[in-house]
Amino acid sequence: MVQQANHRTVNAFTIDVEDYFQVAALASAIPRDSWPTREYRVERNTERVLELLADKQVRGTFFVLGWVAERSPGLVRRIAEAGHEIACHGFSHRLIYTQSQNEFREETARAKSHLEETIGKRVLGYRAASFSITRDSLWALDVLLDLGFEYDSSIFPIRHDRYGLPGAAPEPGPISAPSGRTLIEFPMSAATFFGVQVPVSGGGYFRILPYWLTRAGLRQINEHKGRPFTFYLHPWELDPAQPRFAVGWLSRFRHYTNLERCEARLARALGEFAFAPMREVLAKLGFLKRGHNEGSPSEIVAAG
Ligand SMILES: [Zn+2]
Image: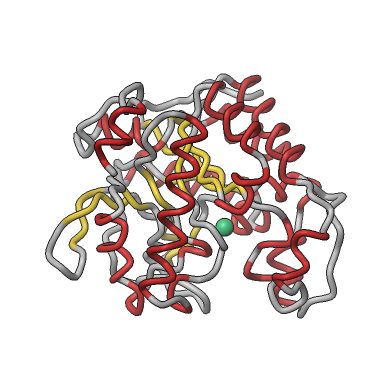
């Protein structure tokens, strides 16, 4: 039997809106210039997420990739109209540390302004492709500040082959950019089992680890560590019928394991933990000045 959320910590529920052919794990098998010819499944898969959230009465934050937002403005509006927060997942899904600062600035500005024009509200939050704000790309925090973002959610305080900032603060709060200015960071979450950090809060980890372990980890973060976690998932993770690509075993394992189990697991987690959009969690913690209804189109113009 699914119980109501059994504690009061409200966690950030987030979705990175991108299609199955855009993920870093498959990049070696899918040339970027073939993207426009691929079967486009992100709209239907995102609608499925929206239905599930409506059913569970949960609102969250959707970090939308600019490439998708430009093709699917109606989808972006439907997400916003359902009461969810629209945030920015960059434009191209290129890893930040493979971009020049100018490339990053230009494509992120394009993605942000397109989203803001689409929904008629300011966009406050940013998440990098594959959590690619690392020691080598901390300069991106200054670019985000220049572009008017108020928070970032790109840092994974663990070790990983493609991302991670070991030793970074595990809880939401101010983070210093290289210029000395501060931005609010809401990092990805990991539990600690026998002294080992285990990312339990989304994506492949959520699909691959047994649910009892995920639940134990999420409860540990809420109850023992006393802080909210970031939950994250992608629409393609609920789509076992997506086209499959021949990639190496590690990428295959990360991308395809338990796709058919993910939706039921997600429904379970939505019933067992309390969630809200990231900006509301941050506002409640006192880190953001604005409530979730603020941010009119006139402010967009004022913010340039
Ligand atoms: Zn992504």
